[in-house]
Length: 180
Ligand code: HEM
Image (cartoon, rainbow, N blue to C red):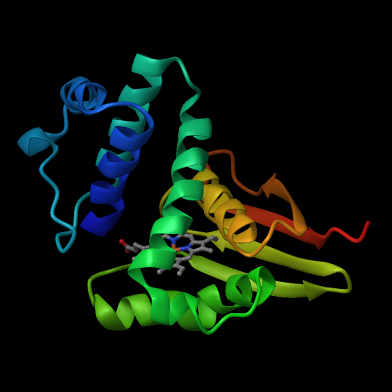
């Protein structure tokens, strides 16, 4: 998985917790090379899970909640890092519908070694469904990313997750407009 996801994970943990806790997380996780990730490199996704697992042990937070919180934060970073990808979308639903056919396609063009997950949108009369499927168990990260983009565009939707696989490799999100 792209080193960017790892380097941002470190930045998020440093931001929310502290540099000292990030050091402890790296040691506790047992990842190689003292957790020195470059954003252009590629690393086994198991190392991200090991880092989140270590953070869960150190903070007492459930690992899934940490993945979700990181995803929420990461959405804001994607807005900053990829303004040309995000900027063409007027609202959350159109961006989320564009992840599969445009954003993750663009990611594979920019980084040929990347393998972004499948994110497929199906319209509903009052919102949309978004299906996530990957060889990696990051449905909670996807949940946080969706929440982060919905917040970025003004929080006008509710989001429900239905897990399609117990390990977290597939989930269906129902994203509905708040009409009240
Ligand atoms: C501007 C918006 C976005 C950008 C620039 C972006 C970019 C990326 C990149 C670079 C990766 C790493 C791929 C790899 O290492 O193979 C990735 C992975 C991922 N993306 Fe996106 N993404 C965006 C939006 C979203 C949204 C809205 C979702 C929600 C469904 C999503 C779900 C994921 C997940 C869960 C992963 C982790 C890897 C996996 O599950 O297989 N992304 N994305």
